[in-house]
Length: 247
Image (tube, rainbow, N blue to C red; front, side, top):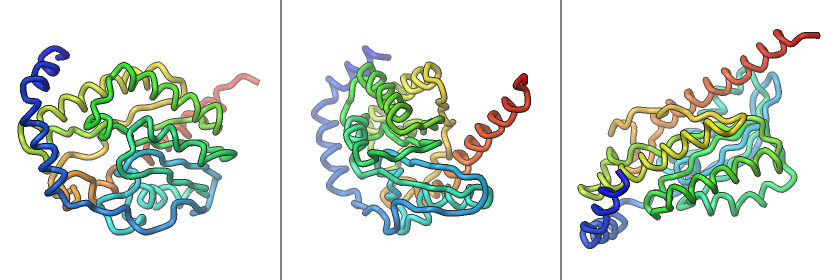
C-alpha cells in the first residue's frame, strides 16, 4: 500500500490541499465541553484513571463532560469503583503534543490509562515508523513515571467514513488511519500491560457530532462501555492470577 498511497498523495496534492483548506473553513469548530477535568466518583474498590489524548478524548462533540468519554466512563465504573480520575486531552493534539503535556501530571500515579491519539497524526502525516517509536516511548513513560499498570489504546477511527470529508481526501485520510492502526496493533502486542480496543462504535452518522468529525453522545456511550468492559476483563485477570498463584 505504501507506494500507491504515496503516489496518490503526490498526484492529488493540489486537490487535497484545496479540499483540506475548505474542510477547515466550512466545518463547524465545536468547543471542548464544560465540566471538571479531575475528581473522585463512585464507591467500591479504588481505581486511579487517566484519560489522555486529543479532541475526541477531550469531549469535543458534546456540550458537557457528563456526555463525553470520561463522563460516560465514570457512569460505567462508579457503581463498583471509587474512581480517582484525571482528564488530560486537548483539541488538535497529535502524539508529540500529548507527550509534551505529561509534565502536567508530575507526581500523579494511575492504575489505568485510556488513550485516544492519532487523527491529528493522520492529518499531519506523521510517518508511521516515527509514530510507532514515539507511541512506545509514551507508554513506557506512563509506566515508569506514573505507575500505570494497564494501557487501553483506542484505534484511530475509520476516517474514510467521516461524513465531513469529501473524496478523494476521505480516501487518503482513511488510508492514513489504516497505516497507523497497523502500527498500533504491533505496538500493543509488544508492550506488556497494554491492550488495543476494537473499534469502539460503528461509524454511523447518527452517532456523530454535528461537525461530522467527532463522536456525539451516543458514540461516547458505546466507547465508554467498551473501555469499561476492557477494564473489567483486566481486573478479572488479576483476580484469576491471585486465585491460581501457588502459596
